[in-house]
Image (cartoon, rainbow, N blue to C red; front, side, top):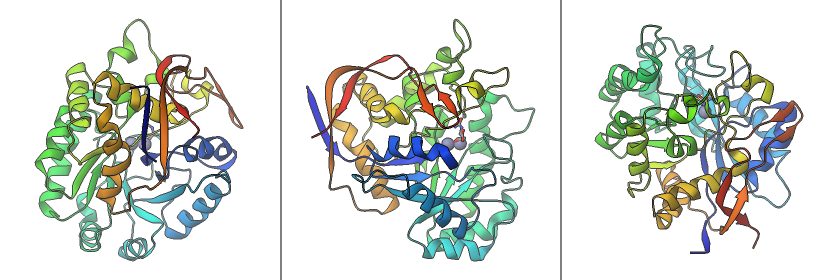
Length: 345
Ligand SMILES: NC(=O)N[C@@H](CC(=O)O)C(=O)O
Ligand SMILES: [Zn+2]
Ligand SMILES: [Zn+2]
């Protein structure tokens, strides 16, 4: 196969950041993807519908004229999120749902949730109004090993949450383990998951063997190979519960290449090409359209894309650096080759 045309994909998990960086991050995604779920972990976090609409306007200013890109805004769930905010979110078509960050779990999660059970009335309202809950699924307790944090979260927090609220529409974000695959498969049609390119293409050896590779460091951290294989199998299984979410999460080069480096892979400059690389490795390019363009829209209840994008099988090198207003940034897969490139039609 030399050319592959698929419906315009959507990115169901994306960090654009704010301010001057939007001039880089918005075009990078909007030139390829039709819609994206915009993560709210700004400083301060995006906790209200008004804040989300103001942030959305700042994003729209950077969308290239040739693009119909639609940002779908996620609100940051805190311990103080009010029922009225759930109602307001349900009434606003540009708000897609709420993002649950366990406090301290990841970048800019200090304002996150410390006591999930205490928010049961909020979850009940979300379930009633079918407002999606998007979850960073890791516990943060110091005694829990970083490689076990997703599994322990599923066992001690998510399964009980779903038992209390069986109708809750829940997306387990950026899954990294066989345990997460099992959890999603064991639940009803109201539970789904996003999978990033780095968790499909890499395992923890790619982070640690031969030296620490800060640009492969993200959260949840890359796991052992057997977990990677479980994710790879799920992504090509044709099960509509698993779909594309890049978790592209830019940090400046000096913040990544540091004694205490930030977590997050800036994959947007090569996102679709990276997924194509993976689907080709699996001899499953015929499944890319479902994973990238159909299943997420179906799950969230948006129309499927009518436009198309075309990939061509031709070697392409990911840039070594991307210049941005906050300094140079090293994209995920920097300087390495990929077998597929995007072409204008
Ligand atoms: N994935 C990451 O490693 N980082 C994300 C936060 C997140 O999605 O957990 C970020 O905002 O930098
Ligand atoms: Zn996360
Ligand atoms: Zn993220």
